[in-house]
Length: 176
Image (cartoon, rainbow, N blue to C red; front, side, top):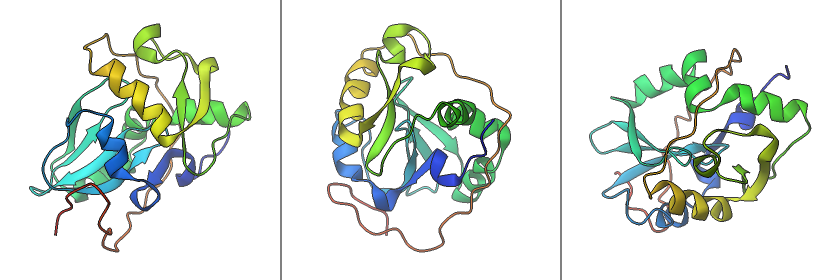
């Protein structure tokens, strides 16, 4: 399988309009947050004032706690098992081998969405602009449909967290 870089798996928050992306989810995420970034499939990761890290999941829907602290999140990001489940690293490697790429400002999206297909169909992946993919994902997964099955991977990419403060994001109340 193809070697993966960190950019193959994750989009740093500074490249995202978190306010616009969260707006597509009907107020599902409230309160002050510190945006961290997103998987290349559009799952948004953010830190709460309590220090907990949560994920807004575009494939299964809802907001889920990922880690009790940012340090724990950093450790998880470097775990093969965690990357497999949360970043779909094996699927990303498959897409890379097949020559499916995305540009800056794009996530990988599925057509049909895995909620409608009942599973992840890798041959249906295509690059979609950030907000274009977020809209159908938010509409479909908020309707309590059956979650898509996740893939298992053996790939690992080491993540080094940014130690710089994350700037304020338009439309999102950020932590101080």
